[in-house]
Image (cartoon, rainbow, N blue to C red; front, side):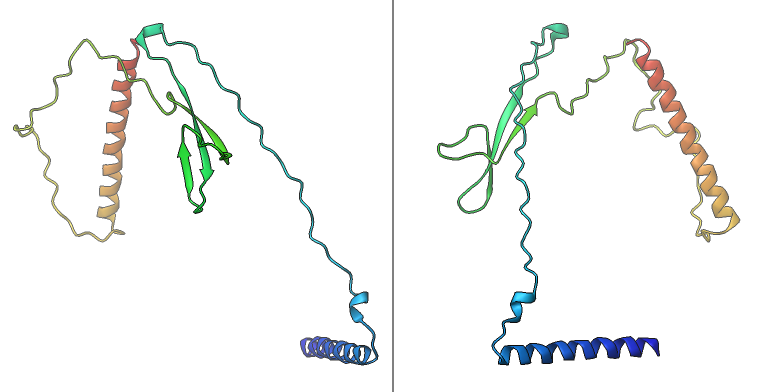
Length: 174
């Protein structure tokens, strides 16, 4: 009931406003003078700081090559496509200057170990104790399936613990 009342009030206000605007315009009154003027806000323009050229030390230690910084320019062509190049054509202002470091995302590998791990079986040989897992079409919510899932998870955890232990032993000498 209250919703109907609110609806009727809003509709009557809209109709009254329309009638008043019609009467005002027929008498030569411009009603736009009573409407507040909304102007778009002018946001301040920000200029991003430029990055100076970076000089890196030469890589004389441990026979490493020195890291290099490349400057790549990005600009929009006449057809609207983006272009990237290390040299900027004449008369073009770059949209962005990108600095690429040759050492970015490079991880040094481990030094080779003196001993060779030989406990890996050759490809042609079958392991002495091969576990036969019967293919089961178990209900995923049955007790057997949940027990199998937990046992598999424990096996994976043991393998991961063993690999972490081997990795720690390999990196202790570095």
